[in-house]
Length: 194
Image (cartoon, rainbow, N blue to C red; front, side, top):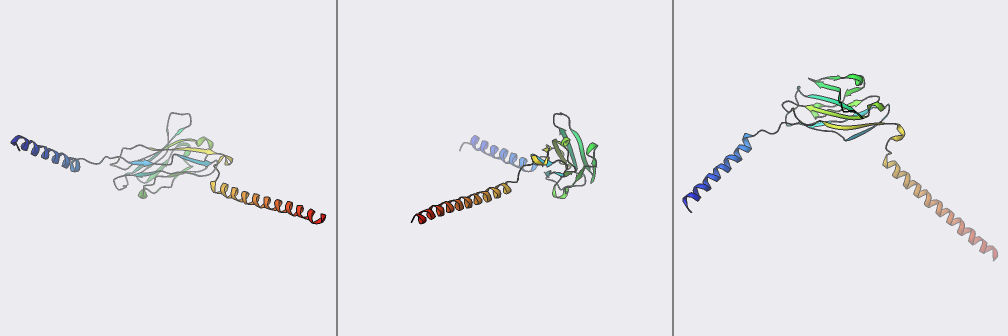
């Protein structure tokens, strides 16, 4: 092997090793809280709705964690704060003051709230934003809340399936009984004719 090729191979190896060590030990993980929530929640008018929000952070949850819930009403571009939690104290805001309660457990990375006495005017997009310093960046999770009349609630598919099976069984029994009666009547005519 020529001395220049040998020297280039050694230099390339050193550069590659140095770069690998820098990436492994010289860079910090990105500081971002991963916040997620269901895409949609459907609540019956007048009942309590739960807006779930969970987060992941590479750091232990501290007393400095903050939870910020906002709403963007249907047809509006502006967002309004409805709930704020900081230093372990919660601050419901505005028209939601007596209707929003924190039900999460920050130690379990749960920042959920409940909305009491849901109203049609509560329809909109809700955003949950969590900061766990030094994790202070990240994208808020969003949930579309739909407050509906009781008649508009989605039907439980289990009840529909059970009802369909029961209806089918009753239908088969009725067909069997009618068939039996027709055959019996037909045979009794032949017996009479003799």
